[in-house]
Length: 173
Image 1 (tube, rainbow, N blue to C red):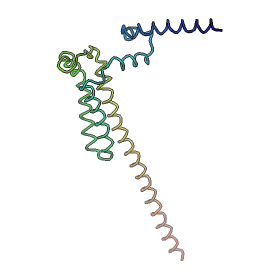
Image 2 (image 1 turned 60 degrees about the vertical axis):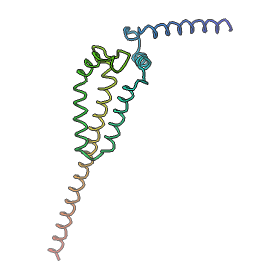
Image 3 (image 1 turned 30 degrees about the vertical axis):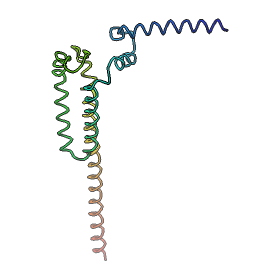
Image 4 (image 1 turned 180 degrees about the vertical axis):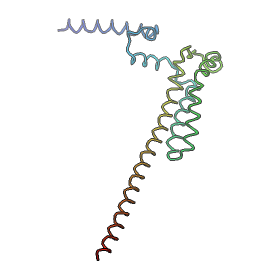
């Protein structure tokens, strides 16, 4: 039985060594044999999350989300936020090119590729999520309004019916 455990340990060490070599070489991005989850883990490990501009970007997304929640029911404010977010998303390609050309001014790492993957994950993706939250707020408000209108119609119909019943009962007396 000890021989089996020793074989398992040798195999697991070989697998672990191969995995570490793949991670350190960056092959995960170039090889389609790896799962999306492996690529996400690689991306998370590749980003220096302590860089001030990344922290500011994450704070921007968090504060935008908080502003959306706090402006619940204030459709003009949410519309303004939605327009600003849409413009940000529309400008993400230009921002990627600008950041790729000038990345040395704010970071030591070149995150900005020609496909715009980093900008999509770090900027456009969260912006689209926040836009989705605003639209869900609006759909929720529209749903509540439709229910309110339906209830008011039903109440008005019942009032008309009860008035008609009262008139009919007075005629028959």
